[in-house]
Image (tube, rainbow, N blue to C red):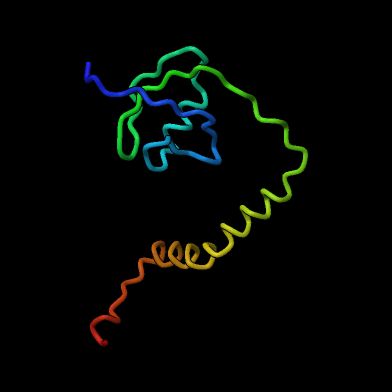
Length: 104
């Protein structure tokens, strides 16, 4: 109906959650990952566009035997967040009112 070009997006996976001509679209990639082969999706709202996807084929990822490297990556990504997120949670739940701006 809109006469828009059809774009191919081969080899889409969770490590590269974007389509060739757009930015990162992890929500759309997640929805497409559970779509059945040879089916057309409903319109999927993304960050910058709306997508309608036809899955031609699915290649199963090889089973991973050791998750230690992935675990180390996740830990190093999340660890720095602990200090400030705990502080923010305590501040929010304690109903602290910050009046320092009045004095400086």
